[in-house]
Length: 174
Image (cartoon, rainbow, N blue to C red):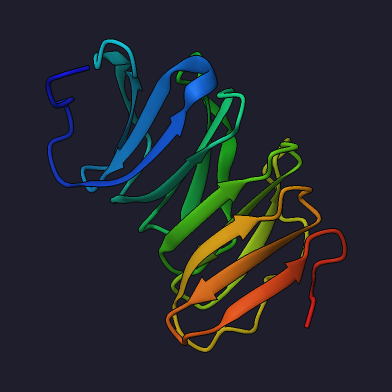
């Protein structure tokens, strides 16, 4: 891969990489998600157009099977990484732009954060919320990361705080 990968019409907002299947996925302010071959740098299939507004964040699971992207319209969409087809219906529950998303390594959960200062946990299989929104940040949420065993996750926000959460019971750890 020597030349830049081109295809998005506007700014690329997020990128996820899966080394096990040599795939890169990208999301753009043009509302598209694109899959790329890490080896050749070429786009795999066409762009995935399903967003009504800008794509703002994205993640791919460790085995490269599932992709999930969030958008400015407050939804998340799951994609099959191999086929590029949408999986299930859009995930709705945030009221403002989704700005961070992660898939747990055991593929049981998806966690997302939004500009409304909340974190949500989703069932990875059916896309349904697994709990009420996690509250605790007073300013815009910015980042989330699972622990290695997927029993908890930590969120970070513009209010200069970290929120450690117990994923199994859906509550703050401290």
